[in-house]
Image (cartoon, rainbow, N blue to C red; front, side, top):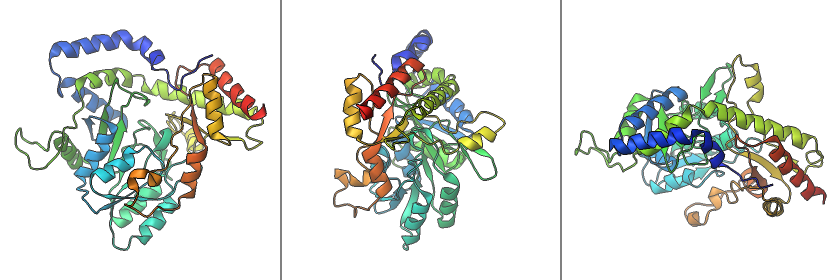
Length: 391
């Protein structure tokens, strides 16, 4: 049996005719920059995210970059974030000439730990930290209530890196739920093909509840131009093209269904692993859905986790990867090197000791969890992992 980490062909098959028809309309329209498809997607994503504005951009990376530009992050500023994320989270900070500052992660959720953040902020006597970027990793929201409380206390804006988490929801202490991207000053999505809502190339979006901030993003994505040929600021070419927008509009209609299917597949893995000795023998830990209990108390279905990735923590991780690939099972390490340990940072910062992030980098592994996965396929995956630890 061959099981890829992600099967985009299976997702495309039932949508293929509709996508081809929509692409033909865009091609025939000759409107290849901005246009009604981009505006339509922006309106739909704003409604979906419960935000005032959504601004389509060229990638998830550019969404983060233009958000920092709108905050006027400049050389020498410091930006607080997680050490355990895709490189873009840190890369955009460096591209602004700013300096990344890291707080360790929570070992259960793998998201940034608010208590570790509190220590970092308390030590910032000169108030040099000018922005905070929490990442909603793997499809589950970071613990935003204490993060936003600290941001308010220190008067620091928050940009949510929600590249892996569009639609994920967070419950506060009052029982109210918020969609990721709608809690900070801005939220950044990626439409990279592997995301739950993925395009047929690069694409991204910034959402915000702050109309003024949204207007700034909209201007900066188009060379800082408003009106045409008048440039009050230096922006960039960060526009989302209508080819991506028209495909994403079709896929957006199915997103809630796909989220639910991924949660179902995650629950199946949890059950299958529970029927083995792996957890009891401490060879493997399944991911923890931190907000699942609150979701079960809700009167309506909640996206407490959208499982962009199903992440296990295992012993002998690298050997297991080789074993699974030899059995034609797709898997991936997200991420083998923490951001603060990347070579490009050498000499720029003093390397902190972030034990939980460093341990996650050594032990975590993503298994296939895409919506079209079958029970037979999942059973095969689990059986092969069991064979590895018992053979």
